[in-house]
Image (cartoon, rainbow, N blue to C red; front, side, top):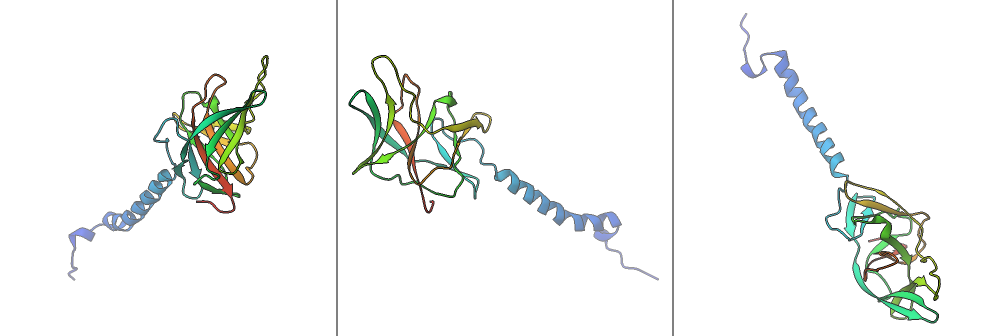
Length: 186
């Protein structure tokens, strides 16, 4: 009895390869998706990024220029024009910020008080002999990547306007990265 012989399907190993190849390719695609879910390092130094939990995407916060004002007995305020940030985060979203700077301990998170046409917060209160600690919100800062850090507020943020900045007691950078926490996000 004669059997037809196809050289491509001649052995059992070839048949297994034909069956296994699509399966291996799909596993490879899944592994590629897992690696892409890690947002990686922020592309810019000195800029704060919001880590979107749903997409694992880093979204740059808007940078706004600020100015300092002094009221009364040496109360220092930082002021930003406008009453709202264009960047919105939903109230129930987990707030994690990624940044890259040389001294991560200089990162600060503040809640603004909205006025008629600007937002401000008290940065520092000082007298001739003492400086009160700043009124920043308590945060946890941990290593995120090879050269970046993650900033997470210690308590959930209430509705309102917020700003992230880089400052030490000696200097302050006039750029503030702003966001709003409200009912719905971006």
